[in-house]
Amino acid sequence: MKQSRKQQSFVGVRSRILAWYFLLTASITFVSVYATYKIFCDSTQKELGGQLQRDIQAFEQSSVQPSNPEALTQAIQTFSSRQVSTPNRYLLVFSKGQILHTPQSAQFVQNNQAVLDRWKQLPENAPQQLDGYLVSVMRPLNGQPGRIIAVHDATMQYHMAELTLRLVVQVTLVGLILFSAIAWLTAGKILSPLRQVTETARNISETDLTQRLSVQGKDEIAELTLTFNQMLDRLQAAFTSQQDFIKDVSHELRTPITIIQGHLELLGDDPEERRETIALVRDELKRMNRFVSDLLLLMRIERPNFLRANHYDVATLTEEIFAKAEALADRSWKLESVGTGEVFCDRQRITQAVLNLAQNASQYTQKGDVIAIGSAIVEETVRFWVRDTGEGIDLDDQARIFDRFARGSNSERRSEGSGLGLSIVQAIIKAHQGHIDLCSRLGEGSTFTITLPLRGTH
Image (tube, rainbow, N blue to C red; front, side, top):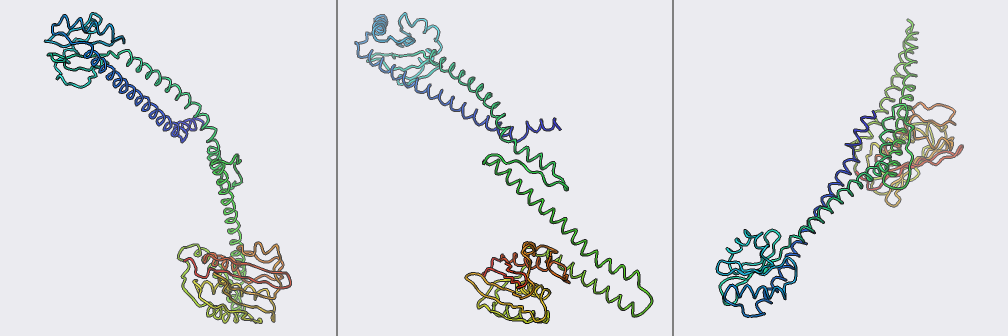
């Protein structure tokens, strides 16, 4: 494991980030250094060329150049001793196939004979030349055959520039290596919460979802850690809910199965007893079938094509629901209010939801208690409610009344349903992008209010 982690550290995100950052920084630095060197060379060539042009002009203006080589050489030497004081700068003349120069430039002429021979072949109006480290400017002699050439040997300047360039590159490489080492360590500390996330995710199992990461700071890593902890909270809640759901389903199915099995084992030969047992088995099977149907409905609600919505008249829909609810039980049914307008919804599902609420109200009321159904349009929403004057719901039970298999703890009798009715109602309303509210007091009754968007979002 340690070896694999070490290998991962050299191929992981930290290494890739530092590698790309190193390459990018090195590329920018070297390109900048090289561009600076080229700019220096160009500016040096331009500056030296201008100085050589001025030297030639000064020589031309100093005196009339003699025609014989000896006198012309003497004139160059006299001018150079008075005007050309810069080291490595020479004034030469190409005349009649010869190179006329001063004794000070003899060594230069000897060392650069090949370059000077090439210059002889250039036209008289040739522009400024750069041959190696030699910067030259040539112009025709005034009224005479031949050319005058001003040359500056910039070897020393270019060598100093190259030496500086190499030094900058070496210092930059050392600096980048040191910086990368420091950045490697710093990145390791910064990315350590990510490793903790990996370790925590690796250690999480189906039976242990309690581990959490410590949140430090307020940066992006802290936000990621907080988000990861919140994800674990949701996973733990979902896993716990799933386990509870499986336990509840097992319990709900075990009861009718046990009843059926027990009666079948004791089934005798008496025809009357057989009829009673068969009736009981059919009733339990019907209850199991309803239970399974409710579970399948809860699963289908999560599908995107669960609803078949359309525009319906609120008043007509309310009256249809009320007419169906009256047949649920012998209660004092009351149509309390009817809204005016249209709502975009799935008529059958809304009817199912309101009737489930009415069925729930009939189970927790007595004969003669009032169950009122109504609807109203408020701003951009439509509201359906079911109000009863039954026993009410305890405050502690109201927080979990919409959970699967939940029943009121204050109820003296058990509902004949599967405990999924209110869960189905809530799921249907959420599918319509609406919500359901409960207002209840013990001994005074309950009011369930469904609120839906008037225009809908489907």
